Amino acid sequence: MRELKLFTGNSNPALAQEICDYLSIPLGEATVTTFSDGEILVRIEENVRGMDVFLLQSASDPVNKNIMELLIMLDALKRASAYRITAVLPYYGYARQDRKDQPRVPITAKLVADLIATAGAHRVLTIDLHAGQIQGFFNIPVDHLYATPVLLDHFKQVGLDDLVVVSPDAGGVERARAFAKRLKASLAIIDKRREGPNQAKLMNIIGEVSRRNVLLLDDMIDTAGTVTQGASALKAKGAKMILAGCTHPVLSGPALERINNSPIDTLVVTNTLPLNGKEDLCRKLVSLTVAPLLGEAIKRIHDEESVSSLFV
Image 1 (cartoon, rainbow, N blue to C red):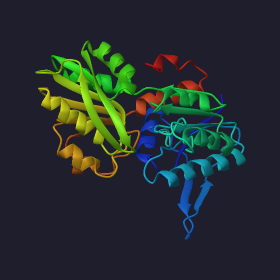
Image 2: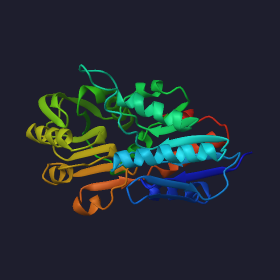
Image 3: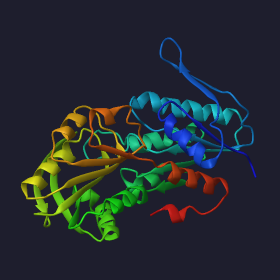
C-alpha cells in the first residue's frame, strides 16, 4: 500500500488539519508564499515520490490567487514524482458559468477543469458542484460528494414541526425535494427571475407556507440577495420560523448585512469555505464541518474502496 499524504494551500488550512486528525496522519509540509511582486512560490518540503497524494484547496477569497496556488502545487507534486495526485476541492470555483447562455461568454467551469487536469491532477474530489454536469467537463475521474448528510443530521436534531423545505429557484427543486423527503416535510418553490449577476427578482411562491416553519435550502450563498428576498417573501406569506441552509458560504459584499437585517432566524453552512470571523459579525451563522465526510472519501479512494455509499 502506497503512503497517503495530504497537503494544502492557504485557502482552508483549518479544514485540512481536521481531515488529517480524522485520518490520524500529519499534514504534509509545504511552503506556499509569494515573491515581492506577488508571484506565488511553492516548495514541497518532504519526499512524495511514489506516494498517493491529496491536495486540498478551495476557491475561497481571493479566488484567483487560491486557484493559482492549486495549479502551481499540482505542478510541483507532479514534478516531484507523486504516484497519484487527487485535487480535493471542497468548493469548486468559477462553476456558475457552466454553459453559453448569452453570446460571447466563456464557459469558465470547463476552463478550470482543463487547467486542473493539465497541471497534473489524476482525479478530483469535490462537494456539491453548482451544476452536476460539470463532472463531464473533466477527462479524469471525479468523485462528487453531497453535504446533505451533514446538513440533514443538524436539522433532524432541531426537530421542527410543520416544516416546509423551500427551493429558492427552479434549479434547486431536486435538492429541496430530496431533503424534504428525508425530513418528511412538505415542499415549496420560489419562482424567481434573475435580472443580472447577483441580482434576483421574486415572482411567486408555489406551495403552502402560511403558519409553517420553513427551511430555505441552496447549494451556495454569495451576496445573499436570493435567500434574503426569499425569506422576506416567505414571511409576508405568513411563515413562522425561517431557517436557511447552504453548503458553500461565499458570503461576499453585502451578504452579512443583508442576513442580519432579514427575517432569517438561523443560517446553517458548512466549512467548505472558511468563515474567517464572519460568524462574529453575524450571530445567525452556524457552521458544520465536512471533515469526516471528506476524510472518509479520501480513506476509501486511497484504499481503492467504493465511495458510492457517500453519494447521498
